[in-house]
Length: 192
Image (cartoon, rainbow, N blue to C red; front, side, top):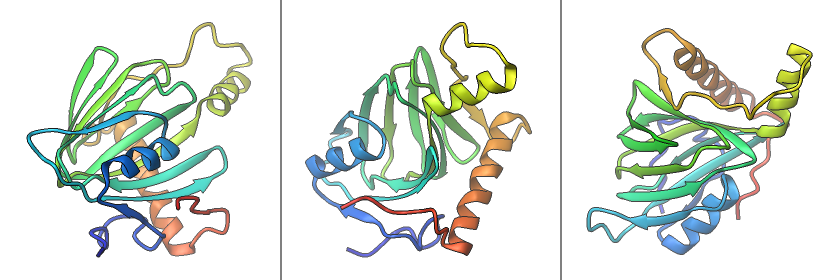
């Protein structure tokens, strides 16, 4: 299978590829968390390509399903995930918020909100997964107080407005570029 990711971040790292829906479900559950994965729009073929680079308490992920798919994650519970589309489009439902994602808008997934996603065949995601416990403990140490309720982010991450979404996207792109440049020694790829 030839890689479609040559022009996308993390292309130099080993990829897991499959055209089997059951295998894609299994791998994406290891990368993120358990979720259902099904075809949509009458599609019956898949071309999953995913790269995962582990970092301390987090991971960078680059992936594409190469198909019309719908994933239902439920509440991810142990992680926050920031996902930006480098190509294509996707619709995310995070809690009660419906978000149409494309190159100028990403999605921030909080561990306490139900998540559903629908991706187009040409969507390519660059994302970062962050361990919930680590992030919440770090926030508590910075503020010197315990969280009174679970930490949740707005789901919509606009890239062009200059706010948090734009800043976070630039940081994730910078980290992905550095990983490619340095082939970070702290990284490993645990996929089969």
